[in-house]
Length: 67
Image (cartoon, rainbow, N blue to C red):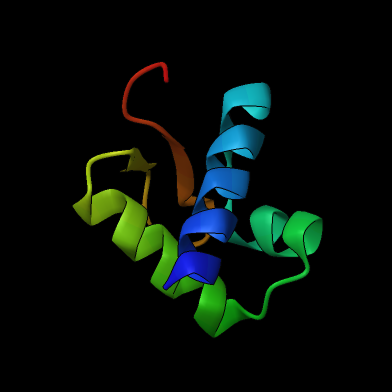
């Protein structure tokens, strides 16, 4: 669980710097596999930290508010 929170904080930091990013971009930056990246992004969405923009291949994530 602690690892997921640490990786989640890293993702939030990336989104804060970039403004928005796709799951694939976040995978490349953090070195995570697709399934791990999806789980972390879903958890961050449920907690209200990130929101999805667009759909399909154009799906990107951004901070729900400035942290």
